[in-house]
Amino acid sequence: MPEFSSQGVSIAYQVAGEGKPMLLVHGFAATAEDNWIRTGWVQAITRARRQAITFDLRGHGASSKLYDPADYTVEKMAGDALALLDHLGLERASLMGYSMGAGIAAHLAAHHGDRFGIVILGGVGEKSLTGSSGIGDVAAALDADSAEGITEPLARGFRLYAEGLGQDLKALAACARAPRGSDRGADLGLIRNEVLVIAGARDDLAGDPGPFAARMKDARAEIIPGTDHMFALANPMFKGAVMDFLAGIS
Image (cartoon, rainbow, N blue to C red; front, top):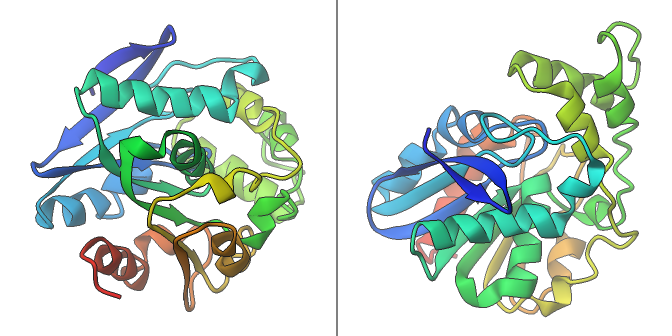
């Protein structure tokens, strides 16, 4: 993967296809490869004659590993996304983020909305607004000597998922400990882009996407039946709803 320097941090990225650019921001403990390529998103976007831009967030995948939680604020992670657009010479792109990536995407739309067109926020909902998702102590699970003895299901799930991808667990633990505001949806009212908020009906990490969408001027929510947080991106109905939204089909 090619790399560039953002705020002194090496960020790995890929560009596929031609057409209107679309920037994709993956979730916590994931990689661009696992969220967007393995699940067929890049293929679907390029088939729709769009250009898919993916990158590994700092601390993830092939990008630089940092071990201070202060290096993982939403402002700094969003800054990497903007720096990538600048590096590629792009003034504007569509935007999609999933889970933690949706939080980064929402920050980008709120504070740099003129750089983005349509925005898709996946895997977020009412529980994402306050951090009351019951995710447990993910950082402690990532710092543990092994997954044995981790009883909290979501924390254990993130640990095993990260291990399976060969991630740097200490870097991810630092990311998990990054400072976050008590009201994570405080800036949503600033967003003027057209937005789709989408989550699975069984996504206990996100909750109902409706209250999240209601905080924005021009957003609608969609719930995909029968899928949860970990498997939504691979769900054909989830992908179909997003691609219809991109095509202007309501």
